[in-house]
Image (cartoon, rainbow, N blue to C red; front, top):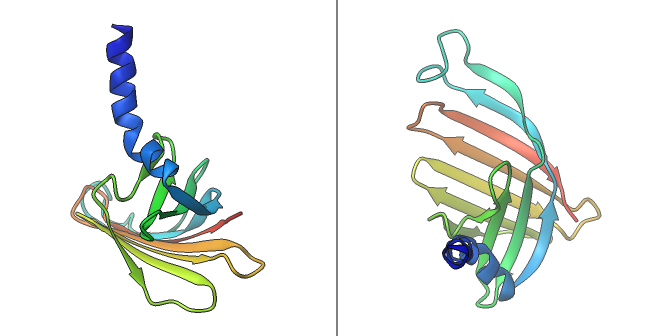
Length: 147
């Protein structure tokens, strides 16, 4: 039974741990804070939509470059860390300048854009998230400090 549990754990953690072996960590960013606009409907009752402060406490965002030159984003929150690519996200690098790395990540029902500013003295990420087609539809913009 111990071997079965160990094998299942190894398989579940494989996408992130295997990726980490053949990648370079570009930035590790702390918890995110910002604002979100909640659309009325679904789990948001009438009159409860609109702009609100939004925070992802104890969260992290890690930008990695794979050995083949592609990027991945590792998200850490209340759940175990997981990579955007292992969750089916399509990661599209966008044109950028000034030492910034700009990525668009597209999932079913979610679109995220990350702007990593790692060349300046600020070392930060600004990111947006649009969630639609679920119980809570919202659009948000966040900021996190990076190292």
